[in-house]
Length: 212
Image (tube, rainbow, N blue to C red; front, side, top):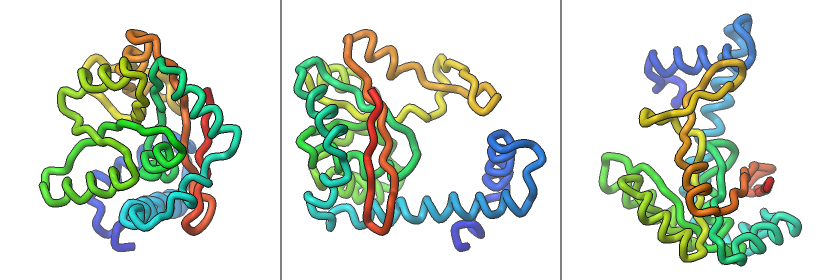
């Protein structure tokens, strides 16, 4: 409720507009309200995940990957060609950077640091506590290329809007701006892509699923 009350008017307008794009223009105000509360509840859970991340034991996080997906991930990572793990801001996405290293696959990711330096430091400490390397999203392409050329694994979120040469693709019947840099990077270096998402399946329990 506090998160909902803290929303600015334009944020509430954006949520209503996007929900009606996804579920239809006749979506009722009640359903919009319920969806919005569900979204904010999920955001609150994600913040708690991040805060609790250093306290999770390796066995707890490693167990979130099925045997099949674990073999797939480790096999591609061990090929020496490099690997790009692709996901989005769905599910418990903050946990993915911890699960991969604890499954035996060190990973480098990219993040936008907040303006507050203390908050930026805290977030970086949390995200790197299990071995993930986090790069600030500024002129980062050279560093990602070096990681991939060395046979490393890079994790990137693909659902971010971009103002630099976007590609517009159909999404729920509406053209949405999409970032082409991940596909370009994979083609340039001939690196495989592995798409995945981590789902929250209970209190402190997750399931990471991959699709190659």
